[in-house]
Image (cartoon, rainbow, N blue to C red):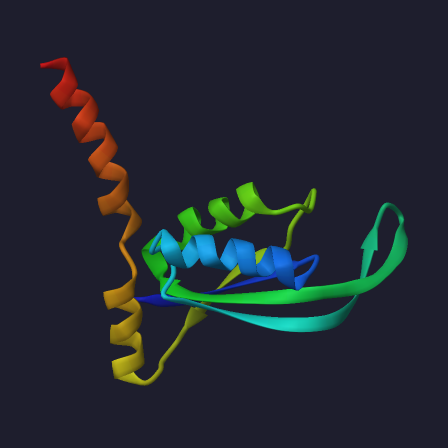
Length: 122
């Protein structure tokens, strides 16, 4: 199985904790780390901007990448949130097994609603 880290920046700890809790409760990720505040410098609206942000780092299985990114974007307050996936090349086997045990692969979750629709049609 392949594993990834999802890195995202949030406007503050409150939003990071809210989004992180959703990701964990929905079993999209095994864990999130919230780091902050940090200071960011970036181009936006044609000028250099500066501000405090909080970093969210989530650990999950690679097949959940698209679902996690979509969920963060849907819940995020920014117009264009920074959300990237980074591969985990290696790690402590017991920790990687724990990620697999604590997450639900999205292909399995997404199949269930469609099965219910077909059952109702019969």
